[in-house]
Amino acid sequence: MRETAETPKLFAPAEGIAGIVDRYGGDRDMLIPMMQDIQADFGYLPREMLKELSESLCVPFSRIYSIATFYASFRLEPPGEHRITLCMGTVCFLKGADRISRAIQREFSVGPGGTSPDGKFTFCPVNCLGACALAPVMVVDGEYHGGLTVDLAVNLLRKIADAGKPTEATRNGKKKERGSKKK
Image (cartoon, rainbow, N blue to C red; front, side, top):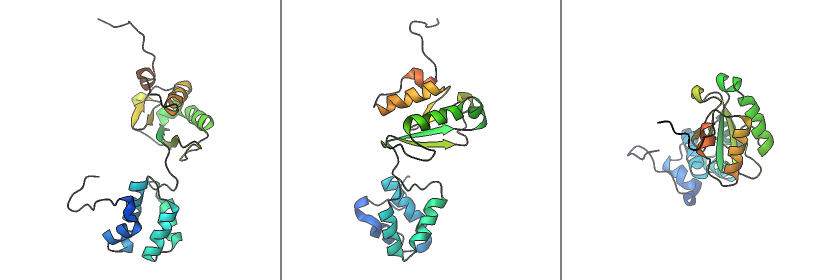
């Protein structure tokens, strides 16, 4: 978010809820932007912060919680170290995204929208990534990986979990042959 004269600067976590509430003048109608500010700094909405927001604004916690669970952009759990977004659109699905999804869930003990027990991955299957030519496609930490198979996807994520960098071969879903340059 680029700061402008109209855009309030996001609070430092040390400022806490009081800083957020003050910035919005205590206006209950600004509840969603306040929640967005909390999530921007923490990566999710910590329960204790939501309780404090509830008390500060004299808004029932149940109302704040219902907003947090209604909007898909809000998270109630800390995100994993790495975000996996797997396209489940028609083309990707027909080319094996469902098998890749099941393998990721099994291998890393993570359900759709959840975070693995070790905190390494947050798994987010989506309806479409708009990259059908790369099908099946997965985005890990903002980097696209196409032409995947179950093995390529799982091996890529294992390397990332082991703090290894993905190779060009896995990124493109193909193995590169050494010394086979065309002239």
